[in-house]
Each structure stands twice: as C-alpha cells, then as structure tokens.
Length: 263
Image 1: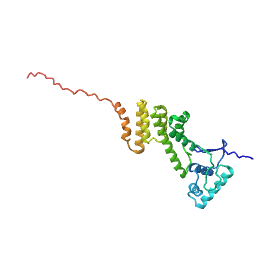
Image 2 (image 1 turned 90 degrees about the vertical axis):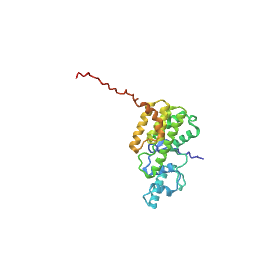
Image 3 (image 1 turned 180 degrees about the vertical axis):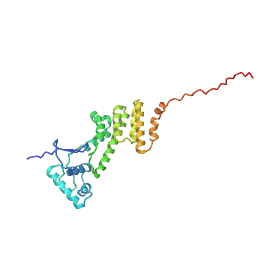
Image 4 (image 1 turned 135 degrees about the vertical axis):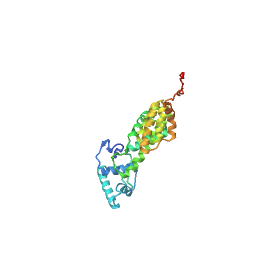
C-alpha cells in the first residue's frame, strides 16, 4: 500500500512573486499568478467572488469563463496546489506563504513579549518589516486593499517594536525600528515622537534636532501644517538652548563738552 507524500509548496508575495514546489521554482503565467495571490491573501472564497474580484470589467459569464480557464491551467500545471473542492476555492492546506509567516512573527512578539522570542527573530524583524512590500509593480485595483492593509500592519508593528525596545532601554534596536517606521511613513507624528524620544534617551541632542527639522520641512511641504504641541514640547528645550543669548548692551551715554566762551 503506497502513501502519497504531500507536495511542499512555498509562495512568495513580498518583494516579488515566486512559487516553489519542493523548493524548486516553477513557472506560472500571470493570469494564474493573480488567482493564486488572491486566494493566498483573501483565503477561501466563493467562485463568484473571485471571478468578480479578478475580472470586474467583464460580464458574469465572461468572468466565470476566465476563472474556469485559470483553474484548468492550475489543475494541470500545478496539481495539488488547490483544494479539491470546486466551491469555495482555496489553496491546499500546508502551503507556506511569506505574508502569513511575517505576520505570525509579529503576533508571536506581541503575545510572548520581546525578550521571550529568539534573538534572531528580534534582530531580523525590523528589517524584514521595512522591506516587505506586497507585490510591488502589480497594477491591480483589487490588490490595493491588501497592500494598504499590510502596509498599516507593518507600520504599527515597527512602532510597537521601537516602543518596546525603548521601554527596556535597548536604544540601538529601538532606533533601528523607529527609523524603519519613519522611512515607511515620514508624516506619521506618533512615529516621529518615538524617534525623538529615542534620541533624547540616548542623549543624541543633535540627532533629535535634525530629525525634528527634517519632519518640520516635510510636513510643511506635503501638508502645509506644523507639528502639534505633543511633538514640539519634546524638542522645545533643545531649540531654546540653541538660541543665542542676547546680552544687554549698556545704555549709550552722551557727554557734553563745554568750551569756554570769550565773548
């Protein structure tokens, strides 16, 4: 009696598309890539939902036909990638998806605490969050929702990571996480406040002032507004210390020189 060994699939959506079968890359046409990505990001869905999602500009009949063609190609070229059930559609269980793995690492840090996870997890997480763009270059209306959601999750995770490191006095990794968050969204004031607090805690007053002035310029250029008092109150003592002291000059004295008159 023979037992079938499940195929190991690995799907990469962060940075670029890549599908591996038993750790070997496989070629997938773009139409099938779209369907696989949609199922990976949205989970199991009805056929009608997927057809409308991927082909919104077509009639229901046309969208259903395009979906059937896609499914046929996947079934013949990538057997075992999809669940056998025809409706709802879903990827087979056990597929490793890099988006899910990244969010699982974030969840693990949130649940167990920063110090209870491995050092390698802590060290790599900030860098991975900064570079984890979801399928950049794909011009797909349906994908923008998923890209925006993941962007916000990455930004929140980096900010939480920076604050957790700061609370434990680990200023170097706190700075790495805060800098990564600022790179993602330089206009988000809460991230800028965290960055300033890290600089101030480290005594890096010059870096704090430079960061604030960069933020001030960017905010004025992009939005035409100034920072709130929650951030200006942090930096005001340093700015005031930089102001030149005005020395009081002695009042001018006017002396009259009297010349004798011989008239």
